[in-house]
Structure formats: C-alpha cells, structure tokens
Length: 102
Image (cartoon, rainbow, N blue to C red; front, side, top):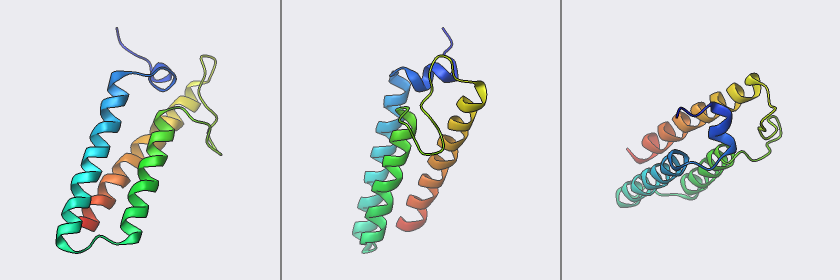
C-alpha cells in the first residue's frame, strides 16, 4: 500500500525510523573519522547535534516556527514544503559532515 506524504509525516513508520538511524550512524562514523584526524572541535559537534535534531523534529512532525504540524486536513502545499525542507536539510547535513571530516 503506497503511503502519501501526509501519512509519512503523521504516522510513525519503519522507513522514517531507518532514515533517522542511518543518519545517526553516518554522523557517528564521520565524527569518529574527524576525531582520529584531529579535527573534532566544538563547532563540529554542535553542528552535528543541531542538524540531527532539526531533521528529527521535521520528520517527527513537530511544530516548527514556519511550518505547523501536518494533520489529515493539511493542504498539499504544507506537506510539500515540509518534504522540501527535510530533503534540503538532509543533503546539507550530509555535505556538512563530509566536508568537516575529510
């Protein structure tokens, strides 16, 4: 059964949990690489935690200042805005972790 975008954000799904676990594992691996290269600083750790927390709250459908939480009655524009922000932040998070640790 295909899942709509609204259902993805409203319901707790295994795909959302796997995505969050994969990001956390990626973050840990890159932090270990940065640690062993001697580049692990406060700004890197803070940006990793802040970036992961922001992605976590977006995917868990938390209320954000510009984006209210999605409900069954939300418009498609709200769902697509939350999806776009999630994708942009995930790619930015991956780029940030790679650029710091390599």
